[in-house]
Length: 70
Image 1 (cartoon, rainbow, N blue to C red):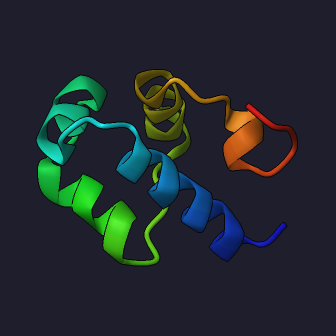
Image 2: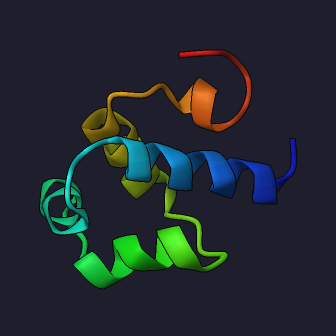
Image 3: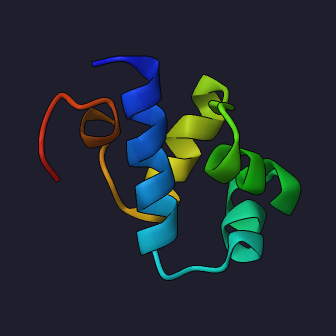
């Protein structure tokens, strides 16, 4: 799996979470603009932020990375 595929999965999980980007940002500890960058640009979060995002979005890192299903 390529980085672009990982970014697509992350974007999909953010969009499908049902949470506003502002709420996701608050829970993860980043700005809403940062979440927007994950959604609209080729920006990938730092590893610690990625781990927090997985928890907030209730998905496994393996799923985002394309290693396993939910």
